[in-house]
Image 1: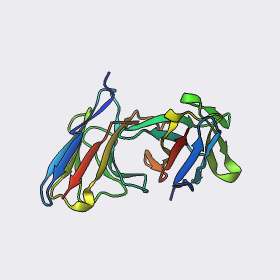
Image 2: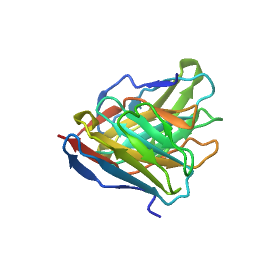
Image 3: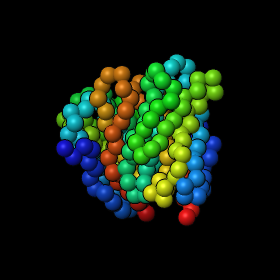
Image 4: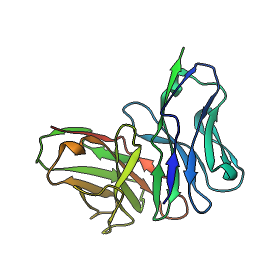
Length: 112
Length: 113
């Protein structure tokens, strides 16, 4: 069965520092991969997605992610974090039956 | 274009009471989904629909029922609420086809006492 692992439950970074959120997936074929962000009390907003082609994908708000098939990873990165990036981030993989399977999420705290 | 809307935003139920959550989308999407979100568990799929008049079970369907009588609406029902159903419920929708991208509503926070 498809699964997504986000190893870090919480991450704290200083404002202006770089960020990397980890995501590992389990899927038999070429995956469709997503990163969503959820601000407190809000719904989920799509940051970026990977379907095929260039393994480095750009998203909104200055985020990017790199698909590495050999490592079954799709890590999210940002060069310089802003206080407004504090939120919960979810990695997801497209699954058989038109579904998404989500990771447990990583809560990002930004300290000034 | 409102996207995906959910009604109500908050609700408190007593154990054994029933209620229906409404999800509406104005994007003419074929697929609609209901998830629940609990701390440390991400989003878990309750039920979904691939078109008007169709529904299917997801990962955690027990205690919930759904209906999709109109393409734009997807209803989630709790017949006899239990404290274990205290959660935040999200609805999502997407177009059919190769893209799995889902669009989410703002959520409904349900507390069962």
